[in-house]
Amino acid sequence: MKIGIRRSAVKILNRSVLLASVMFVILAAPAAAAPGDGYKVEQGFAVYIGVLPAAMIQGHEVDHAETSMHGGVPGGRNAHHLTVAVFDARTGSRIENATVRARVFPLGLAGTTRPLNPMTIAGTITYGNYFMFADGPYRIRLTISLPEQSQPVNMEFSYEHPTR
View 1 (cartoon, rainbow, N blue to C red):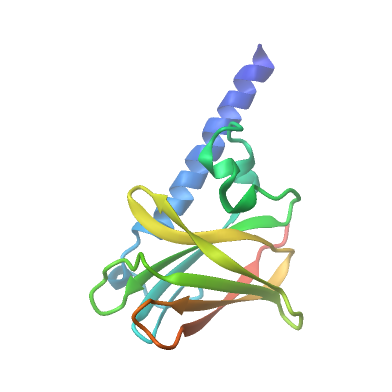
View 2 (tube, helix red, strand yellow):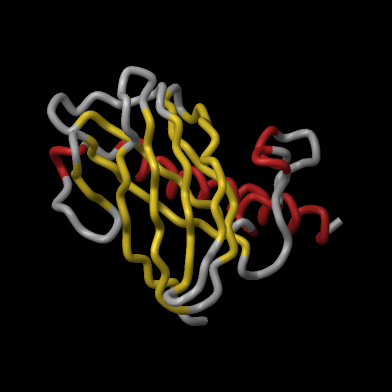
């Protein structure tokens, strides 16, 4: 009985931490942030990024939508979820019709490129997918396309994955 209660408490804690972290990325307004490694304004876009451990999602019940998003939660301690929120820099309006791709790479290596799938959280659209992050410095290169634009916009973020 104690094990079942403990697992339920861990699942609730995992969901609470994930929700709080994602809500920070989702609800942040472009006008409220100063540009830094997790926020950039370029070519008309204001973009926020967030990186969360995939283990935070692994505690969900099998039928929960997050257990199957992006093809399922990868295993391993280096698996993380990259979340991106895209806004119009001029108006502050969220952009919900973009096609977003990310290449995540440690310095000096090729890295991995994946599409960032649109996700509806709290009635808003963000984009995300899973990537492997070991300790050390990374670059996250985003390619953002809109249906009405002829050329995509490229942005690059520095990300220092914490050492354990």
